Length: 126
Image 1: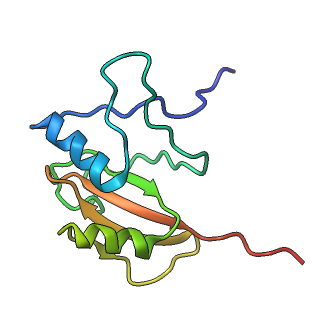
Image 2: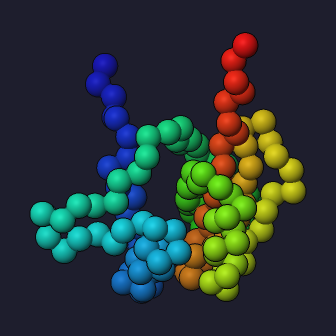
């Protein structure tokens, strides 16, 4: 059976695509899509990726009108949250560490939910 190897892109509608792309580049480091085929695109680091459909009536995303939520892996959740807050962005930290790591929630300028995830470090072996 052939399988996909990973995400090749995430495409979504926006009221102001240029401004939103600039926001993601400025605050999360996701390069804007180049205007030619020679320039490199944003490349994510290899790591765990969860592909999880949620129930249509989930409250997990916040705004019930939003159909998707982005989850980004980060190395240092506290540093990322401080950086975003310094830029005037509200970041809500999950109150406890979960078995798979730590989480925080924010919203982009168009109200789309974003979850930041600092995966739990592997425990050192014996």
